[in-house]
Image 1 (cartoon, one colour):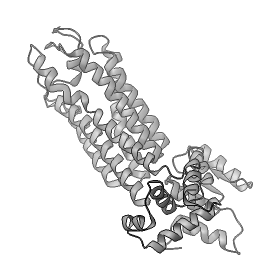
Image 2 (tube, helix red, strand yellow; image 1 turned 90 degrees about the vertical axis):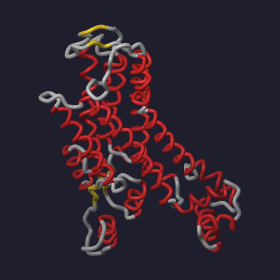
Image 3 (tube, rainbow, N blue to C red; image 1 turned 135 degrees about the vertical axis):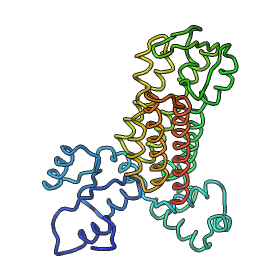
Length: 353
């Protein structure tokens, strides 16, 4: 059926009298709106493409046997859909009622006619089986239908977390200024500012003199940065569920924390191995780029930038390039990506409501 989406095809098949088979959607979309449309279409299965092949086969068998199957990672979203009968526009207008706006004020603020506002609110009252708007607001809130403001606040917390992840780099000028020996941020890695001793050969591969009086502050900021990575990634996961990407992100975040807890001079291997989780980040971005229409170009652009950073860092093994600057560029790119992707999700939330 050319020109139709997968859900539209499913709707046609379920409505058709000539087709009595099972209908399942295999998709990358995990947003509530898509799932809601699929449930309304009464599809027999809603499966994510990144499920293990064994799980997909098992799900198809269960669907064939008469079960209705939805991917495990999407079941919490399905529960929320089942408990909230309101559509997104009704939620938006009830939220405006909760803020104390009149019908006229809502119409002006949302660029709708007063009649349209009344119709949506009347529909919400009927769905919730109440007669007064404020009763509808109360019940909708209990059902999780008036959490628009909270969801957007949560996304803004994510933006703040991504900014906080830059703290080690933002503090570097002060740590470098306090060092009694020369420090070249273009050549030396960030870890040198977290070394706890003042000596040459402080750790393998560091034959030069290192002295960082602010090592305690720097290492603390490394830990905070790792925690900020986790918070930022966790919040993105609440709005764009790509389970495999989130699991890899947890590994990256924990690696960043461990690198701060274990300075290079204390145990070089224990410091370095967790930091290598940075190589997982381009994979994570590629997963989001494949799954999400929102921010797809953004994800691919930063994927390319991170790959270029890795290529440059790999070349430092053979040529005296600016390895330190490339390492810093990598972490700056990651933080900027996270903030911009989260802002894109904020924008989508506003557009959908």
